[in-house]
Image 1 (cartoon, rainbow, N blue to C red):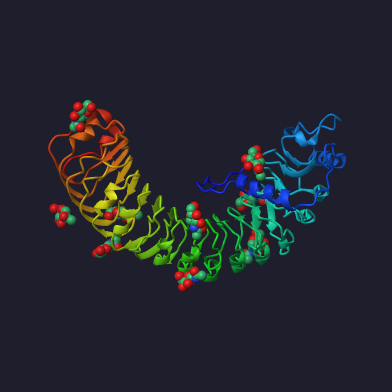
Image 2: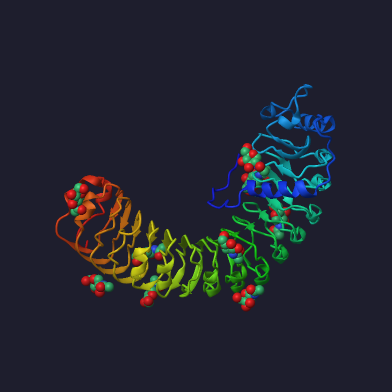
Length: 456
Ligand SMILES: *[C@@H]1O[C@H](CO)[C@@H](O)[C@H](O)[C@H]1NC(C)=O
Ligand SMILES: *[C@@H]1O[C@H](CO)[C@@H](O)[C@H](O)[C@H]1NC(C)=O
Ligand SMILES: *[C@@H]1O[C@H](CO)[C@@H](O)[C@H](O)[C@H]1NC(C)=O
Ligand SMILES: *[C@@H]1O[C@H](CO)[C@@H](O)[C@H](O)[C@H]1NC(C)=O
Ligand SMILES: *[C@@H]1O[C@H](CO)[C@@H](O)[C@H](O)[C@H]1NC(C)=O
Ligand SMILES: *[C@@H]1O[C@H](CO)[C@@H](O)[C@H](O)[C@H]1NC(C)=O
Ligand SMILES: *[C@@H]1O[C@H](CO)[C@@H](O)[C@H](O)[C@H]1NC(C)=O
Ligand SMILES: *[C@@H]1O[C@H](CO)[C@@H](O)[C@H](O)[C@H]1NC(C)=O
Ligand SMILES: *[C@@H]1O[C@H](CO)[C@@H](O)[C@H](O)[C@H]1NC(C)=O
């Protein structure tokens, strides 16, 4: 079974979509089922499906015995004794999806994820006229997404992740106007991305990541102007070039923005950091240049990773106002100036990664005192003065990398008590004095090789 690189995304769970569906179903759908009786017609369709798939061992509870009510089978959801959903996720299915399952007239959700289902997009499902939720992710589908995929016009969840779909993302997806979640990542698309997706005003999750075969493309400005409900935007590794459009600032509900590992250039638009609900911003490994926008109003920010770009200018003072920030990663840029002292006092900061820049001045002495600091990485900069005394104040410091600076003074004795420390790299500085006994015992020798007071 193939599995895409695990992501920390899934903020919108399948369950929440299903809850919405259930409410919808309860209030609007006409029912074809008969209460309190086993619906033999539907049961027979399921048994036919099992046979069509050559009896997968994992569907062992699907029994033709009269006493076996199909609504009690683990993979089946029913309402009023009529089948509303099939969850065949991870059942080792190797056969195709046959059209006859649409004989289940009340079907609203289908989850076929994590199987070995081959063939092209199952257009037979067009007959399932109440289908709201379709998950075909992690299978062996090939070919193009059909141009008439809008026949599934009631869909509000579509996941085609981790298959081998090729060609264009068809413009018809832009006609699925009820879509809330659209996941297309990790396929072999080699055509174009339709600006029509920008018409999906109900969209909350858009994932077009890991499009390894996609030709270099630029985000159309119009894509973002109407997506005012979009919370999660994932386009990592999708071969983006050109600039991040200013219209990204129109995504007023945006919480999670991941454009990492592309070739985006130009400045980070000021509008992005004005988004109030922004929580995670990953723009790392691109070719972004210019300064980080000085005005940052995204006060919910928890993770900010702009590493491995060509950014210059200084670290904005406003970052020191992001009281929920746990990760600040700006390494591999050419940022200069001093670290604003307010950053050292952020209460939730665990990881600060600033190595390989042109930062200067003294390291703020408060680092470590006000938060559970775990990683403090400031190597290859131009820092002067002492190493802060409080880095291990809360006893959780694991990685302290300060090599290649112009630091002076003694290695703080407090580090001798820092049993959590696993990596301490301090070479190429001007440290003086004794190394605390504790340090020698709490670090293993391999790591100590890098610890040498004085310039080497
Ligand atoms: C289907 O079942 C799997 C567990 O087997 C679960 O993770 C997934 O969320 C379910 N799908 C739906 C749509 O409820
Ligand atoms: C999917 O594509 C990958 C990479 O090109 C290939 O190795 C694999 O055999 C393909 N699988 C199918 C079912 O087409
Ligand atoms: C996309 O890939 C498919 C399958 O490999 C191929 O037949 C098609 O010619 C490719 N299209 C483009 C535009 O490269
Ligand atoms: C969309 O963004 C542009 C550029 O930031 C701005 O001029 C425009 O007013 C925004 N439109 C809406 C509807 O927010
Ligand atoms: C931002 O988040 C808050 C709290 O979750 C929510 O009430 C608000 O509607 C969100 N803003 C937008 C524009 O979606
Ligand atoms: C990091 O800095 C070193 C020393 O200045 C330099 O040789 C190296 O190329 C830098 N690495 C990156 C990825 O910028
Ligand atoms: C970094 O910026 C400084 C000016 O602040 C410049 O002198 C230096 O050449 C730049 N370094 C790199 C590697 O671009
Ligand atoms: C660091 O020390 C070197 C060698 O003494 C010196 O040439 C350089 O100017 C110093 N850099 C800073 C930023 O103090
Ligand atoms: C190390 O810990 C001991 C015991 O908790 C404490 O008495 C001592 O002051 C500490 N030393 C430093 C340098 O923090």
